[in-house]
Image: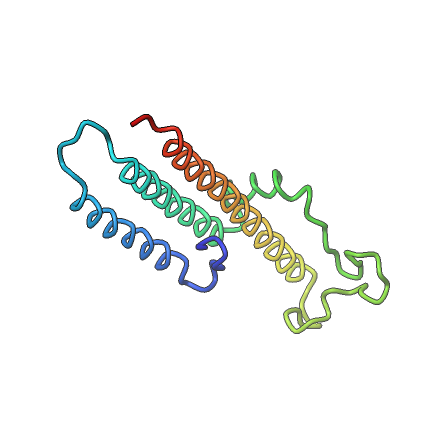
Length: 166
C-alpha cells in the first residue's frame, strides 16, 4: 500500500513507519500469548517475524525511492538510472506528439510551461518529468517485488500448515 503513496505527498515515510510499528506491537502482543518453552516452533510467530522483516525492507525501499525523488540533476545515481530505465520512456520534444496524433502535437501548451520560457528551461522541465516517470517505475518495481515476496511467504506458511506432521 505504501508504494501507491506519491513521494510528493510527504506521507510516504510516516505511513511506512506507522505500519512497521503496528507490526511490532502486534508481534509483541502475540508473542506474549505463545508458550515460551515448546517442542515445536509456532508457525504463526515465524510468519509474523517474516512479515515484520518484509515491512522493514519496505521502509528501506521507500527511503531509497524518496532519495531518488529528491536526487540532484547532476547526481550519478540519476544519470545511471536514466540511462538504464529511460529506454522504454517515450521522449517528449517540443512540437512533437508522443502518440503521433497531430491534435496532440504540443504537450507543452499546458499551464506548467510558460510561453516566455527559454529552450533550456523547457529542457529542464522535460528532464524533470522524465525523472519523475523513472522514480515511478522504480516504485512500481519495488511494489511488484514485495507483492511477490508476500505471496510466496504466505503461500509457504499455508503449505507448512497443510503438510505439517502432528
